Image (cartoon, rainbow, N blue to C red):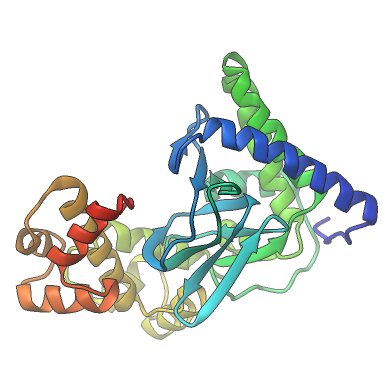
Length: 312
């Protein structure tokens, strides 16, 4: 059921036509640079009129479809490029780096971000039934796959729906479900399947990530986390690193620093207070680790963010 499809010339022509229409529509709904929340809560439209520096950020589970331009995501030493012919799937919350590569005032970077709900995807998989034997995909919690015409058609219909606000409540959930289905049928859909299924080899890592998100400010005991997700400490460490490239402790540190950055930028909280709130007892340790991740001490980096207008 979940075999990938080769692109035929007529498919590429159809993709190009849909991308052109998508670019016009996304530019209209995102008239200025930034992230624009669509009327459909799970959908955001993104516009950037110039290349950006490589910035640390936390990617939430989502599908990223570029309509125009090019971007890259960096997970440690791994680089994932995505553009109008390749979409990005982030299936678990991942602290990464992101950078828009191709963008200009005349031809801005345009993209859509659709939030992924693994519980909804798991219910869809149950309805689809037995897929036969498939190898376990003990791999990263993100991947890049080729856009095909059926997926792009579903995405275009979702964007068109923004012109019909009275129809969104009824029709948008069905379109979101169709897009999920297209990802599952794609060339690397098994990676998402393995994370969404309750009996999938990596589903416990999804639970571990959720546990860490809820307890990021508390001291981390690996044995406690392993017990919470019903794994041995060694198995947890191995599988967690396979999905995220980080140990649970490194992952928690990234969550802490990103949350402190958000508190300082959006909440105006003093850096020492922000560090303490996210679990740091030592202000000097907080400042040192913050500088290592973001490239500057907290006060300087937050001031630069405000001057640049970049969202934290």
